[in-house]
Image (cartoon, rainbow, N blue to C red):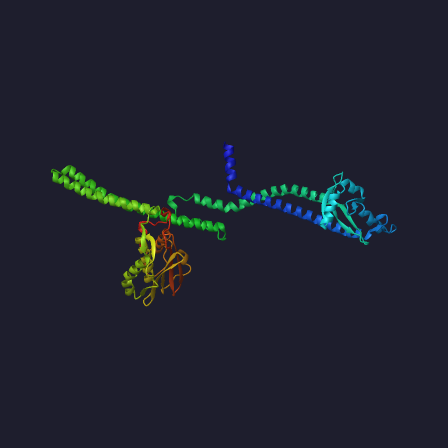
Length: 493
């Protein structure tokens, strides 16, 4: 079993799979090329033979004459070229009348098999030449061309002439045999080369793996150095380093969370314990015991509230926080939010208006979360728009979608920061440290996705920003447990 296990581990290794894939696809390529070359070679030979038969057909028409005794081949026997040509034509041929009676035929054609009367009449009736492959008694293949022949005196005959193609077939067979004998040798060489190249390609990966193995919980801030070649491995290392940064941050948050939880739980537990101990050792009357128990129950209630909050936080972080979806009028909700933000907008010196709002716009959603989304977008727009600027909120229904737009004439966002503004804790660099924690837009993104919509942003530096939220106009059947829920601690601006 140990040998089988080692073999399985070997075949599952990345180096083996890379080399095997390389050899496998190269083998398929070689086989396909061999088939294509073989078919091309066969087609070329066949075209050459057909061309020769066409030429001989025309030549035969020049030598064939009809006399009182019947058809005959006229040529000058003393002319070696004519004698050779006629002799070549007579090597594989058959001549018959239009009724299918054979008038002349060669010995080779007889061994191939004379055409029947029905076959002759069918070919003559079609008015087209026919081509077929026949074999003599020795198994030699011949390509035969047959059809209607009209001599110079106007007499009509059935003529079939053939030419041996065994040499062509032999060349094709030799090519096929030699090619597919060489292919295994090439495949073996390719396998060795692929194994070597795969090993060279995986050397940096092994180096990264060795570095990663040295990372423990005590050195999560460790980073793998980049190779600085800009290839896929560098991108993998960058992704790994970013993951380690996020993991280190998560561990720090968990440590801080554990500290806060232990502190919050320890305080009421200590108080309850102290009160009960005091009552146990010092209480003498029923009223004193009652007072101690009432105080203990109050702290137990406080402890229960803390546990309930922690449970809700855990559900939110695991995506189990369900939205309370109801039918609501988005237009009315937006008007209320715009009215509420008039005071901070006037204090900022910003003109806040709601334009192009329909009289009613019904959606199905969580009112509290939709209000938070609108509040975040309006608040951000006012916050980043200097005095004298404008913020406009619009709402429209297009093709079954409710499109909510917040457009400002503020400072804008650099193109380098646009892809990241919805990331958690991401903030565009600003000289004002009071601009926020970088959680508002990430929460907007979560709310929109949880309602089955999408959010996009367009911005230009020093000219303004436009956020567009598209939500379904009707009910949406979503598995909200898979929504990218944020923890309650992140539901802030």
